[in-house]
Structures are given as C-alpha cells and as structure tokens.
Image 1 (cartoon, rainbow, N blue to C red):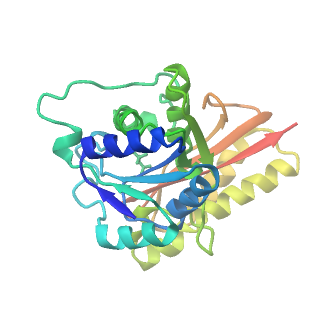
Image 2 (cartoon, rainbow, N blue to C red; image 1 turned 60 degrees about the horizontal axis):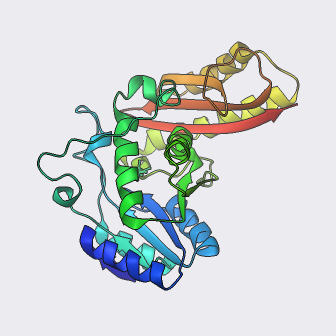
Amino acid sequence: MKTIENISRMSTFVKMMKKEGKSIGLVPTMGYLHEGHLSLVKAAKKHTDVVVMSIFINPLQFAPHEDLEKYPRDLKHDEEMARTAGVDVVFYPSLKDMYPEGYATYVTVEKLTDNLCGESRTGHFRGVTTVVIKLFNIVKPDVAYFGQKDMQQALTVKKMASDLNMGIEVKMMPVVREKDGLAMSSRNMYLNDAERKDAAVLHQSLKNAETLIKNGERDAGKVMKAVEEMIRSKQSARIEYVKLVDARELKDVKMITGEIALSVAVFFGKTRLIDNTTITVR
Ligand code: PAF
C-alpha cells in the first residue's frame, strides 16, 4: 500500500493508472477508521481496479462551535486498517496543499441541503461538496463510495456529480452497525458508558417506526411522535430532529407513501449522532 501526502504526486499516480486502463475507486474519509469505512473499501475492491482512500479532516465542514479540534485522529492505526482491508493508496493531503492561502472557491448544492442536518449545520454541506469536488478532481475516480448513515451527504454528492456532469458514479452503501444496532461512527468514541448504552435507542426507535408503518400507520406525525417518545425515555438523549422526508428530495412529508426516509439527529451528552432508515410503501 502506498501513502501519498502530496496532491501533485497523487495526480502523477492517477495519470499512470489511467494510462494502464485501470479504473479507480475512491473512499473519502476523515480517518479514525471503523468497519463502516472498511465496507466501502470492500465494495470499491469489488468494482474497481485501484482503491484510493483519502484521509483528510476537512475544516470547511465544521462550524466554529463544532468538534474540529477534538475530532479523533490515529493515522498509524488507520494505515494498518487500510492496508489489511486491501486499500492500494492512502491519500493524506495536508491542509496547506488543499486550501492554500487565498483559497476562494466553494461549491453549493441547493435544495437537498436545506432540510435535516442542513438546517442546523449552516455551511456544513458547502464544506463537504467543496472538499469532495477537490478530491474528485485530484483522484479522478470512476466510482466513489459513501455510507448511508450520512444519507443527506451521499445524496448531495450524487446530485453534484450529476449536475456538474462529472462522469463519476456515486454509490451509497448500507449503514454498518454495532451488535446493539448503533450505527458505526468515528464520533461514537466520544460517548461515556451511559451515553453509549442510551445511544442504542436510535436504531431501536427506527425499527419500531418501521414496524408501525408495516402495520399500516401512514400518519407521519404519529410515527415521528413514537420515535421521539422512545428516544426521550433515555436520560442522556436530547433530540435535534426526528423527520420523515421523501427519500429523493428530502422534503418533509405528512403522509407516508412511496419512498420515504426517517432521519434522526440526537445529542447524547455533548455528542451529536445521526441515523436513518429508508422505507418503501406501495
Ligand atoms: O463523511 C465524511 O467522512 C466526510 O464528510 C467526507 C465525505 C470525507 C468529506 O470530508
């Protein structure tokens, strides 16, 4: 496995691979890898010849009060995990290389980023799409892989790639969960024991909502209320949002029909976690 820390060296490597007719799969990450990231690598290995994993903690997507400073970092461990998973190149650009002094170009996807996390995390998706388009331009992947835990992010990147005719396939892969159902996230490490136990309620409440809908409930308000009640029963939980939206445009729905997504953002103590499930009702 190669580690490349420099954009121009990455571009040279990409040119070489393209010349050899190799397809490139990109797994963009902010490091502190877990099984969720590795599932993306596994998918990339299946569909593409060369798997590049980027590790870059992107300051643009953090608001000033968020966790940029304390975001977990462990490059040695990440490299070990990436190597074992069969990553070909870890791309680890520096902040100065990505955003040199005078940097002034940003990419925004409208509408899809208005609701859900876009409502409270002002500027977050602008930061994500800006760094992702830079990674796309540097690595020139044929396919890029994102996890469904960050569904709004994956859909937003997909929309950007399509609107800007980038010729890159953006794949959204299923959420990978711990034994008790908690979605894997680098931020889970912030939780203390009590918060970690409480956090399992996210998946439980989504499953309970799925059952309600399967049993015929079509009133979005009632389903959201049931989810909120379950989450509120946990002492350390503070709900930011529980929303039922249509799964394509992420607009709120009142009645449950077609393809919908139930999406939640909840603080456990100081740690904000998100999760979601998509449901199709015919
Ligand atoms: O999901 C993440 O880890 C980040 O938002 C991403 C896609 C790597 C962009 O910084």
